[in-house]
Image 1 (cartoon, one colour):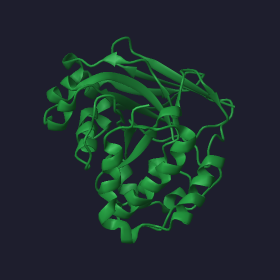
Image 2 (cartoon, one colour; image 1 turned 180 degrees about the vertical axis):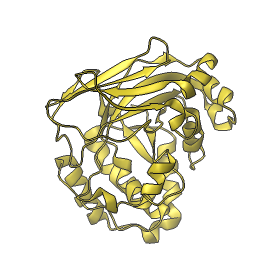
Image 3 (cartoon, rainbow, N blue to C red; image 1 turned 180 degrees about the horizontal axis):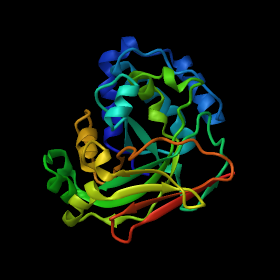
Length: 276
């Protein structure tokens, strides 16, 4: 498995704040709780740099169980989400090789300590020119494929309302698993489609649970690509980038089958996940 070039860079980002890093034993205890699916305690970090340092330690432990890092995720990509956690910009986490599940997967409703599901989207980098991209057209030209994605995150802590931007960063922005859709070739003709598509969550009875346009992510999903790139990392071909939630993060419940449709993309793709 290729280890992304930004994996080493991520550690360098945290180096200046080493004095503020939490104790390794504190992060190890958190990792044990995450792996067991029991509520844990977020490290007491006051700055983003300290949160990234804690994240680096946490990712090193989780990757032993969940596979090597293969990409990045953007979180808090809407103004309401940022306001809820007292931040003014998104946060980033790390994706793992073994976190992806097939369409139609069935999971326990309590698949994690604080389980949620959300409508998301993943793009795969195709060209290192993405590191110089400034426009949506240049970003799209440097991508390989686009993937509908149902993220299944874990907010980990007993009281998620106590999380701050640095603490969300420290818990790796809740990355745990997700349903990955088939890749759609990146095409400049899809730039406007990405902003205008309607992303809708329905249950097994056809009831609409949530709906939002593509522009719900930072005004345009490709803006999340630029934000991740500009967060201090160098992207490489093959990197997977999760762009954030198109709507609310919802709690699973036994008996629910959630289907998410990305209407406007070629074929109006949809993915489903069931909870028992």
